[in-house]
Image (tube, rainbow, N blue to C red):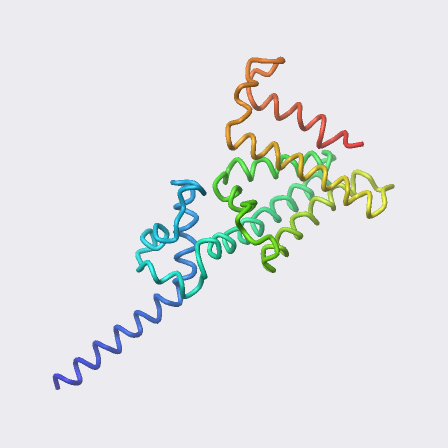
Length: 212
């Protein structure tokens, strides 16, 4: 009887462990996202993430090679979240008559400002840019941007559209990084900018709409 009870407890424990293991990847991704918002990209470690998820320091190895592996997966999710934001902005602009490029640029800026830590991870230099899933997710975002540019410049060929889209992406990315890093605060009060929203509006007028 004692042996049977012991076996029952062991089976129960195994089922619980199996269940937890099945959720481990998602638990770590969630913990990583929360941790990034608290300590930033620079303060992130796999050990801290494991502790946040309530698992042993060695547990992440079941799904991720190292911290960069986990962050690469998080970056994929980030681009996966950004793509529909750009797509929605583009589709709404078609109905409202607003410039497609302007709408997409605003959607991009708002995403970066709302998710600063995640946004920095998405473009982190230490990540493998050729990681298949990350590469595909990045390309999907770029395609959404190209769709907006194509609508604004229907007379342009494919090569020209790609060039304009690249210029727009690099420009809006640069502005996004400067804003979330608070590197433009020194301009407030100068050149007629009462706040950063006015600076942002000025940039949109010059870059997102009037692209040569």
